[in-house]
Amino acid sequence: NAPMEKDEQTRRLWRLSAIGFTFVSMIIAGGLLGWLLSWMLGQAHNERTFIVTGAIIGIVYGMIDFIRDALKAVNENQQ
Image 1 (cartoon, rainbow, N blue to C red):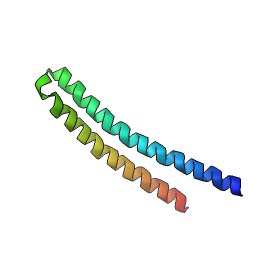
Image 2 (cartoon, rainbow, N blue to C red):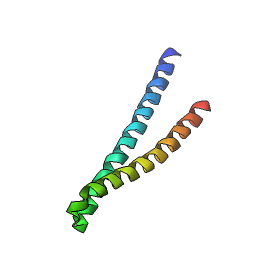
Image 3 (tube, helix red, strand yellow):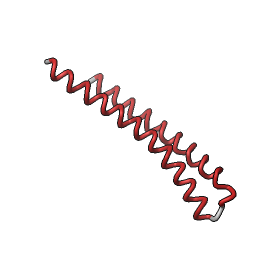
Image 4 (cartoon, rainbow, N blue to C red):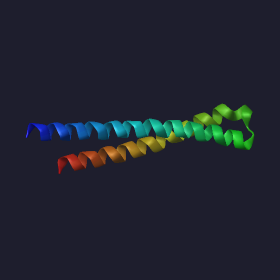
């Protein structure tokens, strides 16, 4: 029974780590998309604005995804 509990605990830790990695990836992707958009539009003087806006959008979307995944993990754990 102890090895089964350890496997379950390891699986939970990997899932939580994946949720955190996804959140960070969303922020980075948002910043990169903002930079790409400023480059495509030729707005080099507004580059920071595009990057920050993209990062903020990434944070918002990442938080929504994080909360959804966390609630899903809690529901699976309770069953």
